[in-house]
Length: 196
Image 1 (cartoon, rainbow, N blue to C red):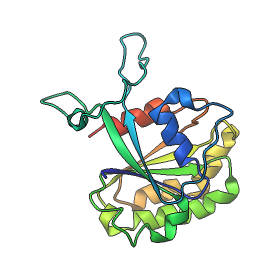
Image 2: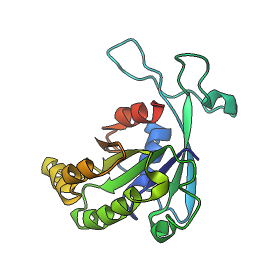
Image 3: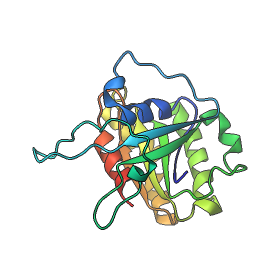
């Protein structure tokens, strides 16, 4: 799998991936069970319309695997498959084959839970030091922004020591604030996923 999604337990990985897969399937009443093991999500990229940079809904799912591969020239892939690895499996992440052939990594942190951020930081640092992930593009997603107040973003980044960390690591880390419920940040995630 060329893209994996990691993060501590209850960070909102499944909820976020379900929202990317079908934005209308998630609302204030939606609930996701913690992932035990792994899950695979096929995320279709929305097509941009010419009206004020708005996105059309994703096309209906297709079983044609060729649709995922870029065609000649400037055409981009139509979808990407993301492997979600449950937070309860964190002790096994490095010991497994999950990191083989990974090109992109989404790391999800619950920004509304300041108590969890330190533990999320320790897991994130262990990922950044993994030799198999030294050339991987990383998306750090601060989720549940609909539950958190504005200052929590700054506190989360401070607790993760991101300004210091970005000077010391090889990987390119992009930071996005997102909410599966309000759909904030989903377009930025689609764009990041679609980049080669």
